[in-house]
Image (cartoon, rainbow, N blue to C red):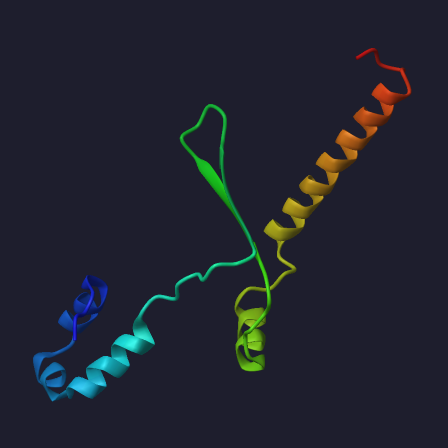
Length: 117
């Protein structure tokens, strides 16, 4: 079985007597359980990197969408691990909503000829 470098690193941290006690089947099961989750193709897959002006920092935004095939156990576990109502999420949504509001008001002003284009 070909193992990747990250799995080899995990196994290297185990005491030698425990590592040698694993059968090939147990090692394969460990690799399956510990391998990173990969993203499959989604019908909607947007990935943006947003640079911060005058800084080396960047932020990323990823939006994926499609059929939800997760089980109920996984859904409840992920809701506990990644709650929707956090300060960061609320600030992001307020900023996004505010941006749309400003764009809509600017569009209405241009269309009503209050502000010359």
